[in-house]
Image (cartoon, rainbow, N blue to C red; front, side):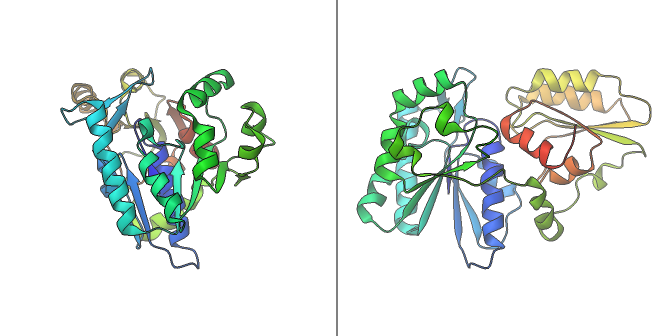
Length: 309
């Protein structure tokens, strides 16, 4: 499995849910997840699943890429990542490669690997994507510039859409060409409640360690945290209803100075807790009475799965 993971944590969580589900199926599978999130090794993972973390990319709100950590140019970083990906898959020899969201990977970094796998002829390639990508005009512009449909024609055997065409049909809305549309299969929405099955044996309840007083729970989630500082600080400053506890998940990419301010505020409020990161936040989400979030696609899917509001 591959995900560029250049912004937020939603793509990584979706890939992990798929890997967890496959690992607990009747089929004996070994799964390698290639990810751009260095913190991936701390997430809950079942036996037979492991991570390969790439040097991290960052995507800003304008859609521009640069290096998250290494002091190198974008081209140098993409070249490095592309070589790591190809070397890993040459050694791993997968039967199936599931690529998340970007048909050619970030900045085309998958091109050499996809060409190699197609020439080798053993690996079936699947593109997995959510059904709502963006405004149709923006999708048409971005996909045309990236030659994404050409990549799907050349390299992919199937396109899995994690959604329901009765709700939103990307084939119709984005005017996929007939040959690309013929590869599309709809999986339905991924049920995030499945995570609880894996948590029971692989993880622990992060809420129990917070020593909160009795009361209702309001959970604030800001994804990876890189663009969630305003919501996080507004939540921390808000006066919650009586007998109500607040838990704020800051995200590993929130600027350190913002994290420090939030921790200082929480230290003065007995019913507020701030967490930078939890291995599996599904239990927090399940136990929350109310959820306040950035409204990213995958977060919304999780909130709906747990029937929160």
